[in-house]
Image 1 (cartoon, one colour):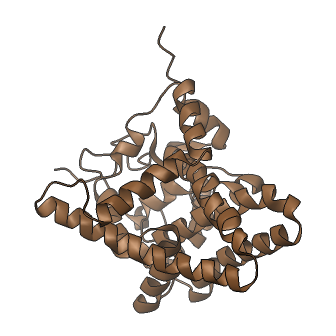
Image 2 (cartoon, rainbow, N blue to C red):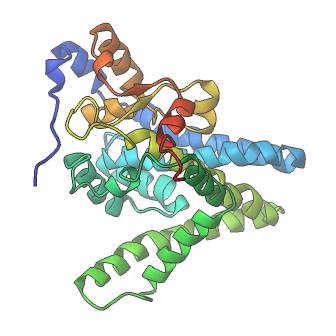
Length: 314
């Protein structure tokens, strides 16, 4: 069971550079969480005020819901706060639970992903292994995402498992039931609180249109794009190419890749580096001539073209 090859930070950075970059900031970590909820709140308020803005609010909110998942991922590495209890509480209740995820379960799963990145034991390998696929197959996946089919399937599976339905008895089934319940129950609690808040504000419909609908549509699409961009069609042996960094413009950062999630190659190279230091790390690596050896794409359109490069069968 070979583990993924590693890179020692001090092989690429000076001790002073690494000390500065690896320093954690409560202000920046918790500030990103506050920013995500502020954007969601402002987009929601604007769409309630002017309903024609709903068409713009859905992708903005859906992208920030992905942002919550990204920040839960950051919490799994201890990057939201230097205080472990605060980091885990925020990571669970303000980032994971609202979107149906559980920090504790995710952390154990995700660290396995880092340990065995792109190896047969990688629990995320199934997300990237099928690529490249045909353009027609990718189009069908996108349609399923934007029409809520992916969301419906995921939630049905989650709550079915939480109720213990359709699972064969045994230790594996018990673990799946427990994991599903750890995610489903907090999800219900937080979403009931959100629904109650909208009802008390006199806008009950906004929960369904401006929270649930973005989660069921745009969030599903950009989550898929994130998974594709991070690990589809990368090298399974080179630690500089286990993951992909995708250069993102302002629009892509707003609607597809929030909170530095596009710097995924840097994240796998230095898994405990706080995400708000990825830009600095990338700049230093470029100055040192390292980025030319890394897996980097110029944007999400080239990544999708690469992912959908399998010729259609005749």
